[in-house]
Length: 218
Image 1 (cartoon, helix red, strand yellow):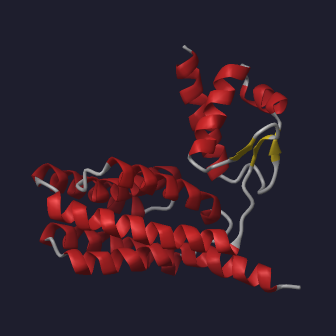
Image 2: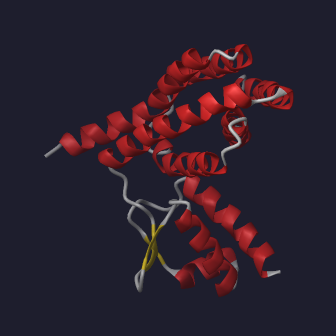
């Protein structure tokens, strides 16, 4: 029962973190979280520990949990690491993915493409977007590459919310999803890696520019 409660509260807190409900640097008070989420201590701590293990919150011995601070150097590190990890996973995925992988990729892209036609349900689009990228790399069959990639996506989530949505960038990113699908089906590894590198860079760029301008201010 505790694990079930832990999973439920994990999803709730994760969504609130993604939505920017907690400001960067804020210390999370256990007593307040227990009250806000109407949850007991054990499943709450389990959920917080899981989020800390994924890098969504910070945990220090004897200091509890807190929201990570945002920094220009950190997001650059996330971007570069994503490129290293995901391009290698993509190479393996395109090389080794079977027909079931192709079918899953086509189906997931169709759902993502349909949701991209409307901005009304951003939560559904975000879930489909995460699923598409997960399936794209899943043909690699490397548990550690896939786990690390998922963690990097979560690490980037805290930066996505600070930048104003840019519809031109969104259109380019959507077009790149279609291009990645086609290249994967054609087994064009080098071109797919090139597009994914551009895709990762562009998806981070608004937040990078914002943080660079803030850190340049006296």
